Length: 527
Image 1 (spheres, rainbow, N blue to C red):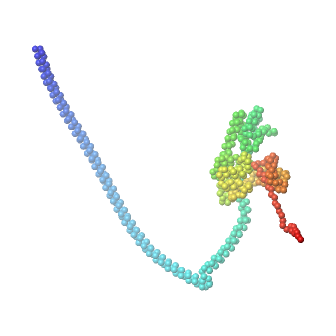
Image 2: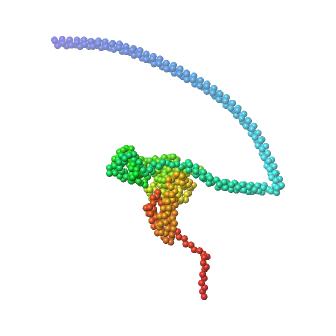
Image 3: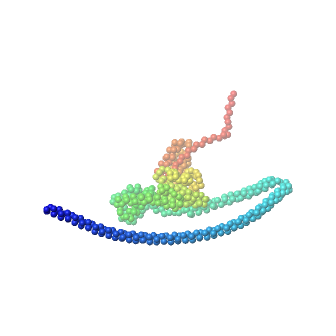
């Protein structure tokens, strides 16, 4: 019974639950339909508003585009109208030009007709003139009994004779005038060259003495047990001797002016620094050596630049700087070379030659003297080798080789260099050596040669740079002549002091002469 009731209540509960569920579901469905309708109406409203907005915007863009298009059409229409007006104006201008050209064409045709008529009249006049000229020639030939060719030859021969006579007179006059004025012109040119080129320079670089300020510096320079001054002598290869009368006067004894300049500069720097120590002496010697070497290049560059002789090898310019420390008969070789270059340039300019090449040859003519104490050979031979090694112009090489007459000059510039060299050395005040010393040196050379047996005569030439010995061929043969030159060379080295190199030449010449007609011919009779 209880089970039946439970089943009944359970069934009623299930049925009631089903009805309740169905009721809830119907309510939810109704609510969902209401919300769906609301959302649908809201979406329709939004879509309609969006469509209206798009339509309004598109309408505004369309209106703007239509307005822009209309403006462009109006602009193009205006430009087309303007272009049409220009075309009309251009067409009108072409029509006017066509009318003017037609007028010019008609005018040219008229002028051509007039010129044709004038040309016809000129041709007729020329024909008449030719006929008259032929008649005249025929009449003249008839009167003079000469035809035209004979008369022309006669006139030409007479004219040539008269012109030749006048030409001979004029040439003779000009030749005589040039002979009269040649010396005067040459002297004037030489004087002007010397005045424009000569100059004397201070000779501080060849100073052989140094005066110390006081005795304290002298004592410091000498050092304990003379170690400072002996170190300085060993580093520079010179000899330093104080004067017996003037105790502060220091003599620099050396034949090398380059070393003398290093010593002088070193001592001056030591006096300024007042630090007389072995290390400072070595340092000052190194610094002075570097400065003097650098000064050689700088001096050469300044000389080349001032003379305007063109580009030159740096090593050759350094060698030019070395000439500053070389003298010849008391004349500084560098300033002598500059002077020769200036004089040669003036002479070349007056004669219409290459001034730059002439100055270059004059500057380098004594370049061998910069190394003649380092390398065997005369300064002429060394100068030729140097310039050939640096690919100098053949004119420069020949000027160096010929300026003392060793070889023949092959060009006019070489002659000018030799002339300028003589002018520079001979001008008053150029060389400090007196004429007595010069003659004495030449005489000493000749006396040394004449002392030897078999020497007929000797001549010192080229300012003592060469001694030529004439030997007796009957006393000295070729081998003895060669030995004679060696003996003379050794004796000159031992007894004389001389600059540069001296060339010793022995000349042996045997002439065998016989005369015909001095004796009668002897005939022998045979029986």
